Image (cartoon, rainbow, N blue to C red; front, side, top):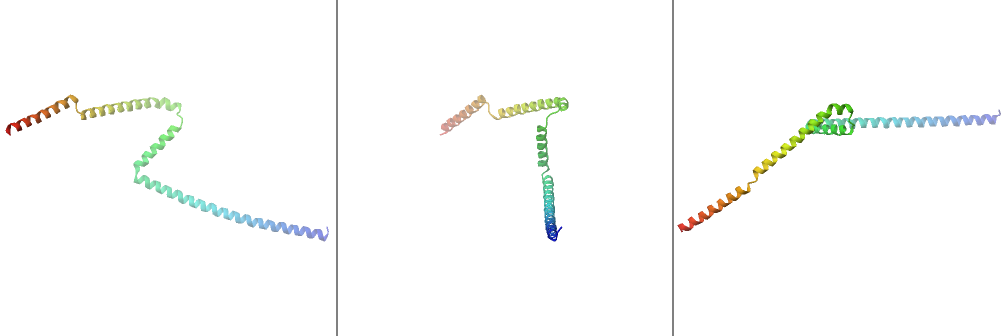
Length: 150
């Protein structure tokens, strides 16, 4: 190998080493920046989640009935979305049928009671005619007696 060839090899080695060092430094910077970004995102997410948990706890403590209703609504929604199993149909089917029948009976009873209450508030037509007639008769009698005294 000639001196010229050694010189080319040395320059190539130097260029490769310099490129390696530059790439290594840039990679280290990128890793550090990525690490900082991940740590910041984690801290932000942890803080936001903690704030959300505190708000939820405060909301539940200040209005537990709304939380209960919300929980029931979520449970019903999830239950409606899940398919019914054969075991549920076999064990809970008769209970559901009885509940449905009881609810229907309660609705009918409430409707009938409401009708009775409303009919009690509305006067009977024949009774109303009698009362109106007696009021008119009393007015006529009062007018006659007033005319006789004048």
